[in-house]
Length: 300
Length: 253
Image 1 (cartoon, rainbow over the protein chains, first blue to last red):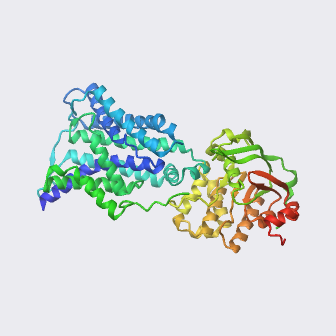
Image 2: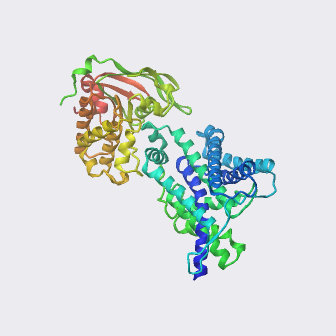
Image 3: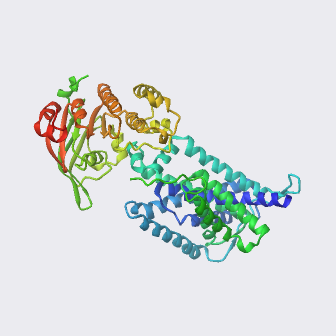
């Protein structure tokens, strides 16, 4: 039983990272009906930015919470800018083109970031600096939680609550939800739709950047192709939760993390990636619009 | 309340559409439409399905690009060619548009829908008093205030669409088929509200298939046929025109 609880704890910490990435997929889909396949690579850039910034700015062996938060902010800002540029340069010129064109472009941007990353950063793995010294905390009953896991959970939860507040409690968030329902009608309210789309990319990419830094704390081996599998799983998480639905992406992310950790723990690590797609297939068979999704009416 | 109003005759032009052409791909939907709306008027555009009425309103609010001609708006900030502006900039000039088919945000509450109507306004106190005033025009919305707009009936959705457009406090309101699909009693109510809106100082450009009620409410009217203005004049002139009576009023007027 304790072992199971331990796995659940690990799964939730891991899943919160998927949730952070999944939010970007789901938000962009919400406003543009586009799967931004480059999103997983933005997460990789987030890790790389923090890695190079730490090397340039910190003395080797420095481990401090302020340094971690500074790097987190820097990576988020850099990824926000990257997301802004991706939308502006790659997707906006295609706003009136068929959806398929934008989708192919998304795959192109993804390949550009992956191969560009190999060119600039080198294909060899790098070791993310130990910004936080890992310590074990035992809340009793034999479960072990590390301070790094707590930090990952705390930061992701804070970011997700912040996003939830922004989207559901503020004027800008209401405008975002209006754009996701109908961009044309939103423009009749005086909403600058292009700006809202930019904002969506910036916010989603910032969350992916944060996930990139957080993952560096627990899995310090980073390389330019590290975004492919987590990106795919976060996409699955967004679809399982109901694409376009923000709470759904969070739940889907946690489900991905939990199932992965439990499969590794109780079945075999061979299936750690397969389980995501098994869940995807089952959910799509039972609830095609996802766990939290409402059936999409075709808009005329 | 009759259609005629004291301001109607003397007001200066608020909107001047000249030679407006709109194309959807290779098909031209409007072939050079001329139309003027003066300050304080209710102007109606009547015509059959597919005559180009909705396209005309969409071109004015920037949702579809003009392929030719001009749309000049003489607003508080001076005169502008609306064809060069994006939809949100046109709203900022005081042109509101309640689109066909209501197009309310069904994923948002009634309160949020109304709040978005006032998206560009920052004067919180004025917005609150405006909201209170608009809710007295549409008491049903008050009862449904915290509900999701998707749960409203068709008539309530239409009222929400109009109320939302009013929240921007437009000087010119474009109304697209406000009576579409509503029960006769509600249609009467909607036209009552249209007159009230004008009496509060808003100019209206009203697109309608219900020609009888539209002509009753309007000062002047245009008949649109397959993308061109076939007839225009004061509403009472057109209401007594034999051709209009035969085609649009069912011949028994």
